[in-house]
Length: 64
Image: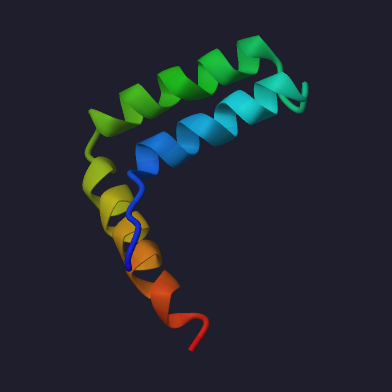
């Protein structure tokens, strides 16, 4: 059985955990979130999307 989790949900959980355990401050989390929104609207969005897709596609083959 395969379980799929949206990457945005996984990143949100990581961000909440980092804030909860005070590994990152609230201000830094807001700045990084805003950077993500601006990055998504730039010409680099396709490159980042391809990179993330390639990494996530390679993940299942790591344990074999």
